[in-house]
Length: 287
Ligand SMILES: Nc1nc(=O)c2c([nH]1)NC[C@@H]1CN(c3ccc(C(=O)N[C@@H](CCC(=O)O)C(=O)O)cc3)C=[N+]21
Image 1 (cartoon, protein in one colour):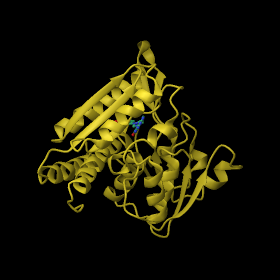
Image 2 (spheres, helix red, strand yellow):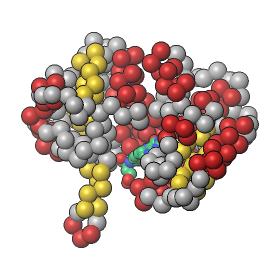
Image 3 (cartoon, rainbow, N blue to C red):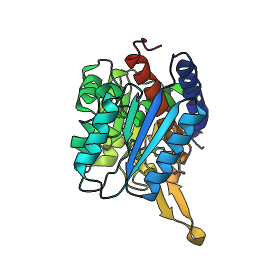
Image 4 (cartoon, protein in one colour):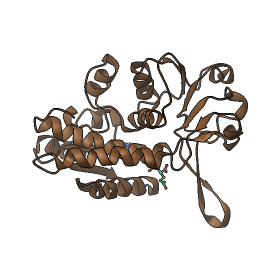
């Protein structure tokens, strides 16, 4: 038996259509600003993908490519300028940042209403308080992927492996808001497999290739693979793989693929967040 594939592309298409429709209903085109520092090849490729999808969806998009050694005050000044600019609706600073730029200081420097990553402490607080705000794209994308494939959450046991501010923590908050019973595991969790085997819904965002193997999964469980790793493959090429070992497909009831699972949902949700941010700034209530 092989698990149902939780495909991201058709689910992302639904979100992108919603973003396009809501953007078109606004008096101005929502404008996303993507900021990256340095030339990490993965970051370059992700930012290019976000910029491209934004344009395809009818949004404006501007990429700010800063040098690897950009001084912190310069980055903060750019964030202050964009935060004050009424024509900038969404601001994203691509992670990881060069080591001399502290992410917390950078994230706090973006106007929370333009913080389409949902990383500003005000938005983090809103998520956990159950109040409206902007939530992180990958976490929202995971919930949208589960919703699209009609995976129920209310009353079910969810286990999140990983506690990063980018994925693990916010997805735990959203699962809790969706009435799941949530446990967050991390590198200090003893007997990880005993815990993961209890999960009806297992979210794996540990940043470790093939961490979750078949014996760690309850037969029939829904497994979402958030990991994305470029491993050396044949002929000097890279292969993309996740935090979940492919053998899990023989045990799980449903499994999200890498690539083609959570990744496209993250990008689509970023554009939806940008439209939501523009709606708020233009005084339109979210549809
Ligand atoms: N401030 C910030 N916000 C982010 O949301 C953010 C970030 N920094 N830094 C890096 C991670 C990673 N991330 C991905 C987005 C799309 C795909 C994606 O589209 N993946 C495709 C494959 C793309 C490929 O070929 O590499 C897929 O899974 O099918 C993957 C990963 C956003 N991140």
